[in-house]
Length: 209
Picture 1 (cartoon, helix red, strand yellow):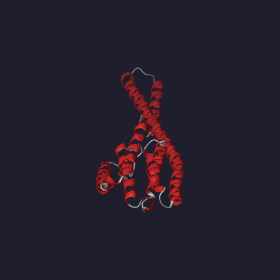
Picture 2 (cartoon, rainbow, N blue to C red):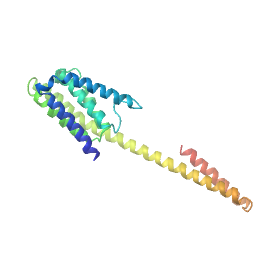
Picture 3 (spheres, one colour):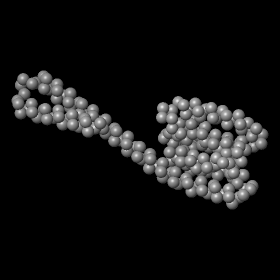
Picture 4 (cartoon, helix red, strand yellow):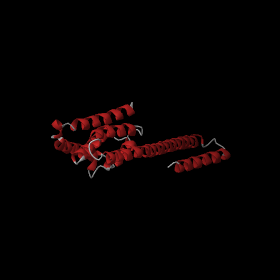
């Protein structure tokens, strides 16, 4: 379901951009850009790590950034825009923040919204730029997949460490209770073994940190 929601957010964003190519809505581009900048700054300020995009990034954050970048590009001469290159970085950002497979939705969306103006002037140059973007997308997909797998492995390692610490704490607590309650009737050999267990449990706890 997450992938479907993420895809829907991208589709809505591209649909909005496509609508703004209509002359009747183009006059509202600047106010909408200003509003999107404000929204994104608020979302950015609320993040603890102040990162451009976060893994598993919020739907509103991605929607705002994608719509904002595309509106800025269209309002600054489309393919000739000095910030057209941001689409390449955005493809990586979306692949890392969303499900990597969502990059396919992103690339198709970009091609569809730029296709009407790509066929007007400098057709060859325009299609080269779109082609480069399409070639970049598999790299974004594979890098994002590798990154997410690494994150999952790190989470599993942390979970194992926590379980090991909990187990060591439980063993230590049980042995200390046994030593306290049964100290008088325990043999010296048993006492030594229990103390060895305590030492091993403490070593396990330290290694799991």
